[in-house]
Amino acid sequence: MVQKAEQYPSNEIVSINLKAPKEGRKVLKIFSYKNGFTQVSALRKGFQLLKPKKEKKRS
Image (cartoon, rainbow, N blue to C red; front, side, top):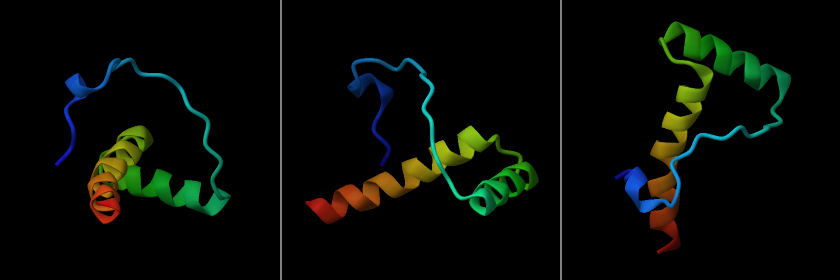
């Protein structure tokens, strides 16, 4: 389950820089466009889905 924003000290949106392979960026852009997402929302959703699985493995 995704943790609620209230558990974090700040919910302020900030910029981050990412380096990705050129082809990976293109795939993300096309996937996002075809599915009605922005690239940012697609990355956020992917992180929300991946994070609980990784945290569970650490336990």
